[in-house]
Length: 131
Image 1: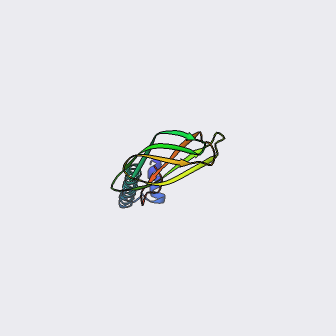
Image 2 (image 1 turned 45 degrees about the vertical axis):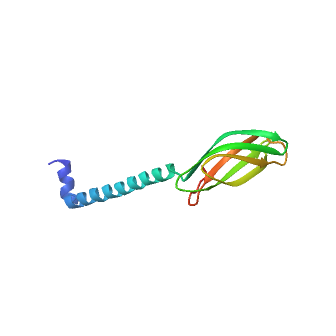
Image 3 (image 1 turned 90 degrees about the horizontal axis):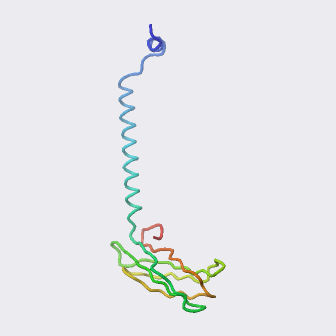
């Protein structure tokens, strides 16, 4: 007698129905998780607002202008945020503004001379992160 037969005689063989039920349950859970993963990837890769920095210019010790492109899907306007930094990486100016679809030029007032400007992104209602 084989060892498998001895184990089956001693402990009983697994029921074919139980194995089928377990396979169906695992397949259903895997399908649900894959469906959720596909939805989450699609949802987060298609935001309602996207923006990109085109360029900036330091005008004087208290002014910086920045040009950015804003792309809106199914929205008329978005809330955007731009931040200016000094040579020592301190924030010296910040501007929150409402943007429309297309190229935008904004002016940021600074407390001292800025050396760089960062586009923190735009978002529409219901969008968690700025893009």
